[in-house]
Image (spheres, rainbow over the protein chains, first blue to last red):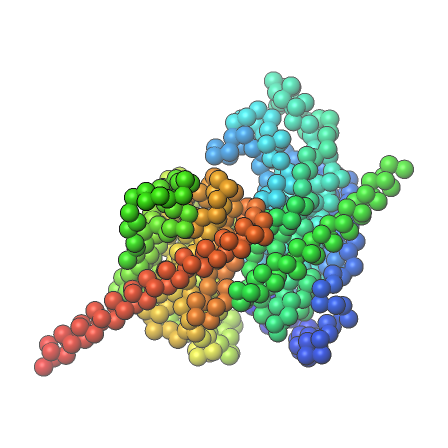
Length: 287
Length: 252
């Protein structure tokens, strides 16, 4: 993902990249992890009070905040009975030495679209439940995620954060708005009673880097920079595949299925971690 | 040439929106060297898809500060024309087109021997004149022929094909209706001789078993299109050699 940015990388990163390859020969990773290990995951839902839902995710040193807002909007003409989901991600200039402010880069657009697909295709939110008046008014759900510190694997962190936010957030009640549709111009969305967001699935994305014929789960920034191939696979809670993206590089035919199997096993494990952290949070807030 | 299947010879009960069998490609035709000015060019027709690819280069790279010392830079733009869809598409590149340009560039980069041209760049332009589903993989198939037509050294051809799931059935070469109404879409691109996958995306929902089936089906379709790529290049070689003789005769 970052090969094109190599010139922007610090000398330290280039030396570390060299280390990744050296240690690969000894079957080791630079941070001492096993090849199939994630870094420590910390998920904190509701870290920001203003939006309808939010979460902060720390995946090792990767630091992401996700915020979700609802607005009233008009449905697309080809899907009149569905709400709208818009996902946008931005790598902030705080994120790394090479990160720049400005219009979204190719990579940022790609990452946003992969996160969008993971959320949308898993059906985590049933968009038909966001309808106020079919064909006329629906709820628009904006998922915005920002990367404050980029130590690799932004996508997995963003999907974790989005799902955690959805599980703990509240949205304006579309039924209430439908009942008060005559006064819709007067309604302040903030005053509309809140209901839980209709969450139907728990999609988990897992990103793998191929370095020297070996898959590295949850690659960090340096590992991503030397990866021969980089792929994200998202699984639903029923073990279906709902999104795949090969960002760069090439995979042998058999390697595709090796990656799918690794991803399936990891997704089950990470889903349990996510659910335990979200549960802890909701009990804490109840107390 | 596309095979013409005999009608309803005990086809599976399942019929696709355009009457195809589950493992049947739409009619296809690839032609190389169709634009006079480009260093290499090709067009593909796959069902209603009509996609034109042009290659310029290798040439001096601008701006200078972006030059890569050890290899050429491959630029790629996938672009849908405003009239390519029934609802006008804004000519401004959409987020989708930016993403597709990137994954297509990656797919082609795997095959092109960029080390041969340090400090240079190669531009690949893909214009979708008419879109009817699976344009990204058809684009790659055409672009690879255009690169070969430009005489750019490559490790292998790159050929793309899609598979998907529609009404519970795994299908080859996802058409427009199947794309909109289907359950899943799996576009892939491969280097057929090196047996490498260079583009792999999926959206929708498939079990691991269905994914395997779809993947194998897409591979099969890609191999068929690979033959057509070779045909297109052979045809252009033949017409070039006759053209060459003609020129020589004229000079005499």
